[in-house]
Figure (cartoon, rainbow, N blue to C red):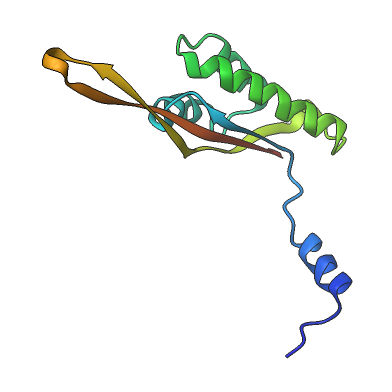
Length: 128
């Protein structure tokens, strides 16, 4: 059975689209577990506090997430016209990305496999 005209279907799909400001980083050279340590620390915080947390966090993932958070804030200002002081980190998660497989030479001609993991990090902001 026909579902309607193509433009009507697109209109309905766009009405359901999430309009919250967000930023996504694909293929970050961090494992999901290491990225989640920092993401768990900033989830639910307002953006100014979250920027302070990631700035003074010694982990490598925090520098990558700080850059992503600044991008999400810029998206909120420029694309959505939102006030920065009213924003907080609504969602922060990392999903498994592709795995680069490398070889480490070992004794007696053997070779061990090293898995260099990547992740896709997503930050979604929202107004208080």
